[in-house]
Length: 450
Image (spheres, rainbow, N blue to C red):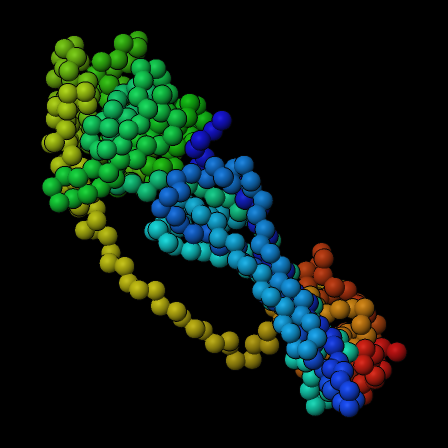
């Protein structure tokens, strides 16, 4: 069974808001107690949080559907419904969140404790106590709670490390991490021993940095061969790339120079890694024939303006010089980064004359209205209650939609769609439904809809 998962599709549903309550206060000797319906509770959010103790997305591989609780409905006596609890999903440091439908990157979660609201809970509906006004003193309706966000996201883990070790299977990358740090990866003498990226923390002088072993790179890795296509993304965040070349390989057709060229071709095919500085490590110098080969190919690699180190992960030969060279490159990269400034909240007021909605003519008798307010008001309306529908007509008229439809050429009986063309609310428009000109009926009714 898999123990390391670095990419999953997650299906998320935030909690729906609770409905408001329509209630009238009833008490002896108080015949006109008035409305006392409470508001609905807010639906729970779904958040992602970077957790230092989480290193894989395995839990979401097994349980890809996550839902937050709904808000509770309001009640009489001005009792508001309880809010739904937020659901916090722990993710590893370096998790990239993408919209599964569009592929758009929503956020890059880096830094322990970083939080992101990936799905927002719906607002609770207002009770009739909150809807009371001088014009409508005892509303016989309440607003419905809004649905919470529902979406599909891709979680993609990219290892957060300073140095990436790349090379063929069994080149000694895991042994090198074990020799440089306290990490203890699985080490064996067969190909593809390393099935997951290993991380180790290395100290060189006053510099502390992390090293990652990227497993499974072979020719064709960027096109799906071996394991490399699954793990090349873990190189993206690293500031330095270290080629670990096996000088003791007995496979026919392989040597340090051809291995270097093959891995470089795969990194180039993957893209976006050309600007990373390189170091080259000639490993397994404790083997006599390997040392002779290392001495032979070293000048050829240095002709490519590469810094080359002959080492033995088994005997620790050359590791001190290598670790300080890595630290030098990591320090230079950190110094070259711009100083991060504190995030500033920019508030941009709505442009003068912006109504907050748009009326679009589809054909002679069909019009579409889009905008945050009218679409939200539609979701809040209980269409089984005539008074609630009349209240919606009041709001749309005050917003200016009646006037905008007239100016767009809508005639009595025209079909108006509020929201998207697929799934929007469709109704026949009658300009006589002027909220300012028609009186309201008894609670729960509206004379305009009789």
